[in-house]
Structure formats: C-alpha cells, structure tokens
Length: 183
Image (cartoon, rainbow, N blue to C red; front, side, top):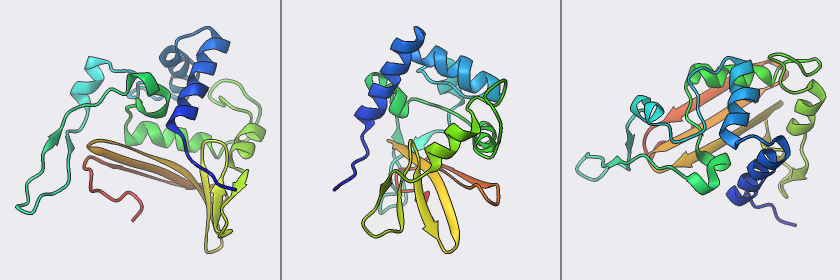
C-alpha cells in the first residue's frame, strides 16, 4: 500500500552487482557504464583528484546572507546510493542512453527493452499522477510522461528528468542545501 525509497536497498543492489560480477562496484560502473558512454569526468569513489574538481558545496543561506561551506561527504557504506560525482556533459551522455533503441552492445549498455521496463510504472501513487519504475520516478505533467531521478547530499542537490517521446532531457545540479532542483 505504500512506497518508500530506500538508500539501503540501492546499496544492497550495488553489493549484488559486486558479488555477481566479481568486480568492485566502482570498477564495474567505470568499465560497464562510464567508459562505454564516454563519461570521462565521472567517478564512483572518494578519489582525491575528483574532490579537487568538485564545486564547493554550501549550506542554506543565513539571515545575514552568508552560507557555510559544507565539507565533502564520502558516504562509503552506501556508495551505490550516493557516491557518484559527474558533470552536466557526462550526465547528458547518460540521458541520451535513455532514448536509444537496439540490442545491448558497445555504447548501448542496456537493451532498449530493459530501458523501457525500467521506465515503466511498477508502483502507482494513490493520486494516479505518478509512480515509480526501476530506479526512476515517472510522472504525468499535462500530456507528457516525465521520467527521472534526483539526489541530495549535504551541500549538493541534483535531478535528471527526461521525456522519451520528445527525446528531451533536463539536468539540474545545485551546490547549496536550499537549492530547489524541481523548479
């Protein structure tokens, strides 16, 4: 009767990937997702080089207009749920994957039937205006179906949304706790 997003479940899925593949999770994602998609500025670990390139994360704006700098947060134990760093350009490569058709191979890292199944509503919200696929939320906005996923860590907010029919994607990355990625 209820749906609850769970970072623990996403982390468990990452452990399953590691166990089945025999590869460390970060290595698997690099080899099977980032490299084939050409995502050269993305990583799944607490690589010091990646930290140096991150935008500074900030807390909410205080009444006097200042913001505290938020230190980098390595979520280690739940890495599959939130330890990816990336750029708008690399995330655009990930979004374009969502529009492809065809069999798995090369930069087509998932068969298009698998992608469509991930984008299909598996759990419908009680208001009938949205639901959840596999790894994505799905909502109706007017006559459009919007698919996406967002995330947040201290100092950062993000969302990726796309419409399959029009092949349009939007990526929003904000480096402040009070940034609203949904507006």
